Structures are given as C-alpha cells and as structure tokens.
Length: 173
Image (tube, rainbow, N blue to C red; front, side, top):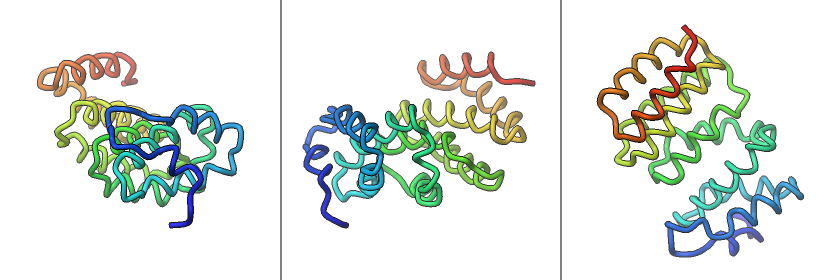
C-alpha cells in the first residue's frame, strides 16, 4: 500500500472511538482527490483504521455519493468478504449509494442476507435497511424483503424489530 497521509489520523487502538473520522470526512469533502487514498484504507491491516475509514467514507458519501462510483467492483467485493462488524455496518449503509445494475443489486442483496447471520445487532439492523434501500433499485427484491422484515418484527432484537416496522410501513406493495 502506498504511503498515506490520512493513515496517522485514523490510527488508534480504541475501536469504540471514531477518532478523527469526522475531521477526515470534512477534509475529503473539501479535497475530493483524497477520496481514493481513504478508500484504500478500507483494506488496512489495522481494524481501527478500517473502521474509521469506513465511517469517514460513509459520511462523505451521504453528501457526495458519486464519489463511490469508481470503486463499485472493489466495494462489492469488500461487501462479500468483510467480517469486521464495524466495517460491515458502514458498507451496508453505503451500498445502495452505488449505481448498481440488477445483477450487482442481487449480489449485494445476497451479501446483506449473510450479514443477517452476524452476531452484531447493529450489522443486522443496517443490513435490513440496506435490503430495503436496494428494493428501490431492483423492485423484484420487494417481496423477499417484505417477508424478511415481517419475520424480523416477530423474532429480531428490539432495534431490528423497530427498524423493520418502520421499513414495512414504507415498503410499496
């Protein structure tokens, strides 16, 4: 990996802290050319760096989702292979911001359904939201997502039940 000027700002040992992720997000929003460097850090060997980079990317792409389009293949691959819970929930939050084809949407949905087996309730809740969001890209996912949300209202954690109720109310028939 090339030398990174952002790396020192993301390092640290406390995975309960976002560190300087907000500062990085502001910096990259002002200087979008640094986005590529931040994306590379999603594959850092350091879990804290991966988590904080993902947090910053998620925040940046809320305002500038078009920055993700050049990294679609890499992010779909990372969505498939990520096992770190903090990385997973940020990827789930971002995936529907990509300009996905129907096949890519199906691939992302399959990855997100695997996320529903994660130990983390946060990962599961973000996966449910992402599956719902993908129904706007590919309406063929609506019925399976509806069934999943209905099941989760009965069997999920309190956070998953609450999110599922809200999503079901918004899901078109």
